[in-house]
Length: 83
Image: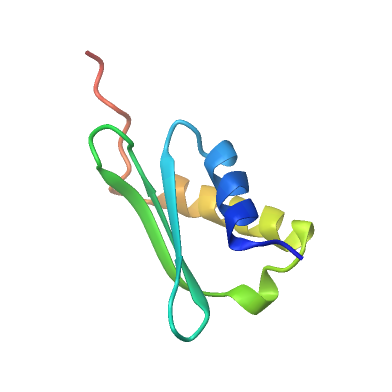
């Protein structure tokens, strides 16, 4: 069984250097927000994820792959400007 803290750590490591915020609502659904840690620019928010289906390492890996796909497909996603 994977805890919320473990899931957050897996997501953070998978999407570094983006930061991750995971929260659970009253109906036990998960919201994941991926954002730039310095600017605060939000790159992806996914909500309504069923925590009951995220109890194994395989389910967490599948979620990470889905988040990767969503992040890449996000038409608002743009690379950080070169400074």
